[in-house]
Length: 138
Image 1: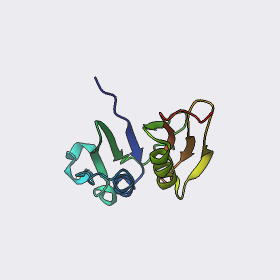
Image 2 (image 1 turned 135 degrees about the vertical axis):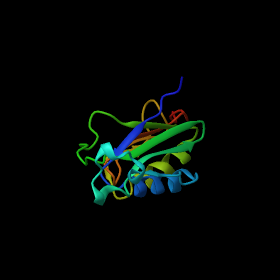
Image 3 (image 1 turned 90 degrees about the vertical axis):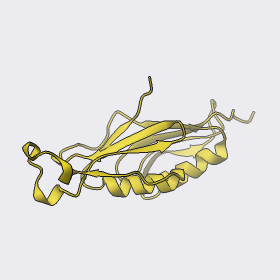
């Protein structure tokens, strides 16, 4: 079994997926748009280009996302996507890239458990925690 985070956006899933693909150095996923939805879903005309589903492969894991065609998903609260990297240098690179334009809740810094950790909401409102397996310097 694998667990895959599924992120919802309000009309900007394509922008978020493109941004994440760039940060993680992976291919931009193929997008299934709302214009392929069955008529009984009653997708408003102005939302037919929104993303119904996409899956991004990041290493051995998947990150899934879509737009909420009802456009009523509240921003994430009480949930974070946790990423852990082998080195503090790679963790800091991803922290800096993903947090650009967002709101840092805990700046990237060494902790008592790790050579680096930080938390933020990105410019799309997705909450992230970034850490490293590298032990703290003593």
